[in-house]
Length: 190
Length: 450
Image (cartoon, rainbow over all chains, first blue to last red; front, side, top):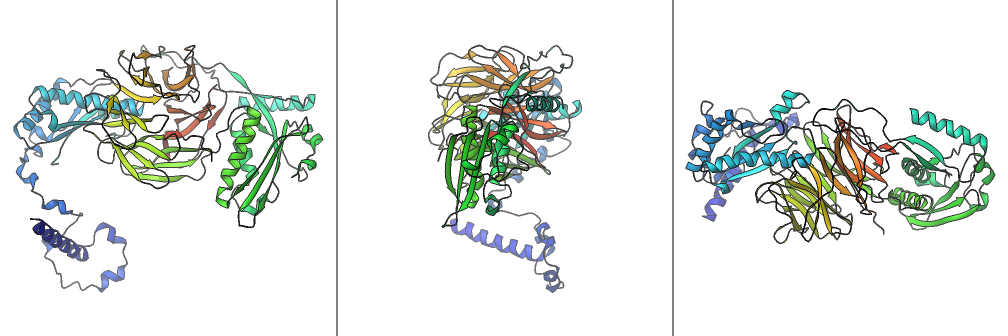
């Protein structure tokens, strides 16, 4: 098995190197033009499908969990594609309008034993950074608690906080603050 | 502006009266007098520090002999003068037109006293045979015409600036009667455009900033180890808050708290062996003690159903101040490190956070919301007396200088983060550093004796 993996890695690296040499990535745009001119354009070694636009790590050869997960998480028509829960000022109460969303994710996690999620709590920028981190944690915990009641296993739902550090909208308007007081649901397969 | 006018007036007054000995120029500053904006129901009026005066020492820092030969961007004497002036406790006497004076017998006391000087600093910089420099200074009493102190240092070219800070510390200690904190370092976080975050370490005067960590994710809460060799901080690089400890000299770093959930708010124990951190792994935000080398298991400090965060050890290591909303609003509490009864220490207002002990442990500084603002306050443990020191709209993260004289904090000007400092009596205010970046999260390193 180890041999197979290292073999795969070598193949993958070779593919990557081939792809890089024939496909200029963003970083290479500033490379000397001479180099590009010297390369014969008429003899592409790789078919177009080999183009690798972003760096691929050997982690790709692990079981492709993403394919086994239901597409429902990304389907815009499915409630599971909705991932953001907004909160009122100084509140960690999950409002009525977001309960179906939370319930849908709780159900998904309880039904798929491989599903793992992180709930990220956030606050607006008013107040202290560390205290806001704790308030954001409380929002994430509040969502988790609701999911637990609905059967989601605690060990597969991690709650973390970004406090005020990762605003969705910059600025000091009430609208921006309202957009930033939120919890976001992220799956390990996202 | 008012401060400058008053100062000029007083200068004029004293120069005419000729009262040279023990001259104390009074600068009126700090102690806010503005009327706060109308209060909302949840707000609280500001109890500003009383307007007061600062007694300033009039000091001559004469140019040092051969200091131009050391090819520094700023001469030794200029660094000393800038340090002392920044403290607000010293007024530099103009040296324009004075004859060179490097040795005790050359000092023209009559002239300096005519310019209002209490004390005169003279000195020299001499290249040594091994390519270093010998820096000497003498601090002379202008009235008694005697030497108060005099020291000699040998330093490499790269250490000349530090040497100047050490000289400023020696002068400060003799004249102000408390240790100086000029030969220290600060740390802070810079946010660059494009959401790039850098953790910087710089001299206490903002000189020679070095980036010790750069990340595309936020960095908060840097805290110096008691020996000044390491920084603990919270980095979001793993898409969650994780506490790291990094050696400043080697850059080696270790995730010391990376548990399920959030890890934040590191605070060093005075012996540098442990950290108090806030973990959410047990639910909520709760304080734990961990080893600073990342070994062992966290030890829960207190258990509550509320937010307990921002721990800060007392200088003797026996107690911890922290922020908690167990009473309904965020307030400062104290708990013995060995466990025991939690005691509330702030009672005024509805939002008191980010407490830090003074180096002598008698007072603490924190952020107090009043008058529609988040202001820096100090409070005496014994008298419980609260004094509001600043009027910034969104001041954050106050921290004492290691000699307890100044409080460094994050503020904002024109929507951009800056560092500012205020003396612990509110009478001296400084804009601490100027830089093109958005600066926040200051930390002030210890006085490290070598």
